[in-house]
Image (cartoon, rainbow, N blue to C red; front, side):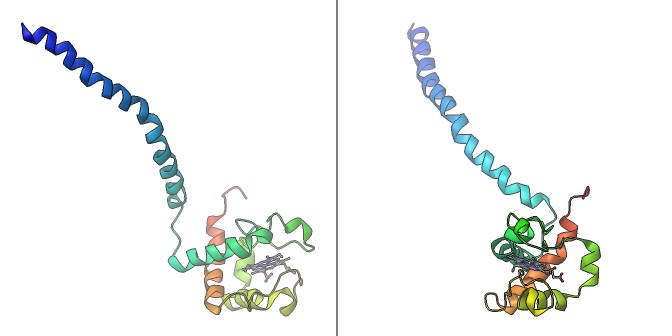
Length: 149
Ligand code: HEC
């Protein structure tokens, strides 16, 4: 006779914490799931070599305002610039320029290499190594282009 009464009590006891856990679960699970997706998103694109990734960090910090996220010359500051920065992700442009020429333009700025003085010189701000990393990153821009453009 002890079992029929003990069993419902035991079931209630087991269900209550279960119900609480179930309520808490969605919020607890949501946050990590969302950030996990965000963290995965860049990794689904072709991974860049380490130096190019360092260059990307520098580019995002110093260059993106004018040159745009993808180097297309559409940074939010670009409309102020006459001439606008060219599309650095254009494969035709990239073919015409050697690494040394790109590094030189970055180091000495537009005025230093006969282009618009609106392209600042970076030789005093960035190390030669950082400029090399930038060039490596610029070389990846054509491969990061959206197929439509
Ligand atoms: C204040 C805006 C501005 C910023 C910031 C800037 N640039 Fe420029 N950049 C320009 C403009 C404008 C031109 C185009 C100059 C021209 O064609 O006469 C240019 C041109 C260039 C060119 C092309 C030179 C060529 O051969 O046509 C390269 C490469 C370049 N920038 C790299 C960079 C890098 C790397 C950074 C960050 C370290 C950077 N720029 C930051 C405005 C900017």
